[in-house]
Image (cartoon, rainbow, N blue to C red; front, top):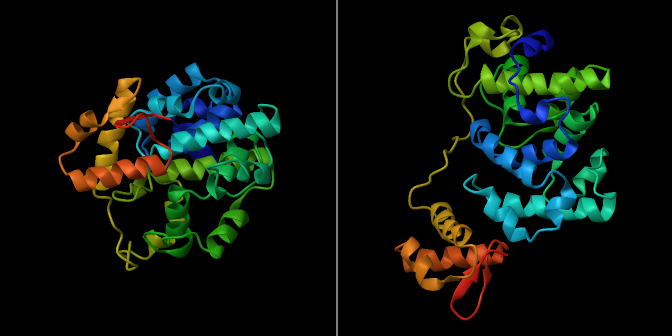
Length: 281
């Protein structure tokens, strides 16, 4: 696995030796449910504008939402802003290395805390994202896909596989993640290119099809997510308060539009501005 990673790893800015822990943290929140190719330009622009947590914390949260652009799930921008503020207030502006301290930051869950501890600080911790879980499930347990939620046995498997040396363990974690992203993919795994194909229980069993609960794709057209995105795009592009009439033109269904606008306000992504206006926070 390690030799394969040395030969095939993608050159990503948050993996380079000079990458700061802040760069790693930003990348991890941006990469949640978002492809690398879409994250790369936004990550670069973000780090150029806000190279440190303190630089982001000095600006209004709405600027983070504006800079998030069309990455999707814009609440992640608010979480990054809140995390930056907490880092300044609690850790003198430096991203903490301790997993528990990372977990205490707004918007940082189990996976993100483990990823930052491993990839930014070389800690020996199990990192379980979707790609890693899929590789483990296929190679170790002979099933096509992992369960919907992380199970205790998955954590045990990941911890048992970690090399003892912390820096090597961190490289191992990103190597398995890369294998899942490039070779052991969800839809079209390239088993002929896999460095552990001869050890794979799923391959040995003849690639049995997934027989668990239905795996639902994420709809987009006509959904509240699409409506919220349209409304938020109007607010991002305005650089100031927007009259409600501009939002009315962005989405035709008044009931859905009202529901989504109320949701944006409740989530802190929009704020009322006068009797008939809205703006970014």
